[in-house]
Image (tube, rainbow, N blue to C red):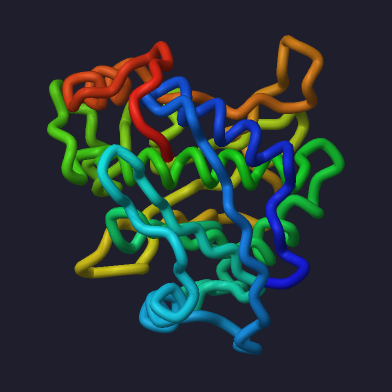
Length: 237
């Protein structure tokens, strides 16, 4: 949506994540600015309809095309009275919604966490679902699916946990839990709580916060499905 373009920092972090876990080295982002649908909230069907109207790139040969919609409206499933907000969701095999307006509102509650931090964490987590994690198309080589949160990891510190604990010193935390975005679709991610995050650990490298990576179990799963840790050139994204 016009005025809701993601930050360059988040896209850079997202690109690094893709290069780390895939053979894709030639990665390009094509931005298309859209007029707002002027909705107070968006349903999954409305998001899918917007993609049908606006998507311009599709996979072809060894080139993978992914559609990411950065919305100016929250999810219809948000419950602000309970502190439940949806940051993003995957709803088709190459389609993702990022509720950018919600991300900005959430990040504004912290002086330590930026829009870019929350954007990158959400993009990476949701693309983990597009990788087929956890038990979402990619076979789990070990049992690490959270019994209380389907399609999320139970390994402490993993990006794919259902509790993305965005820990900041002195701050309370939010839990990232499975949302109601789709009984028949991939899971949404719902952050619970009224203060700031906890998946973003204080960095030892000078950065204010550090976005967690995939845990060992999730890495082994995508490697078993053909992924690599070191980037190699094989097609485009």
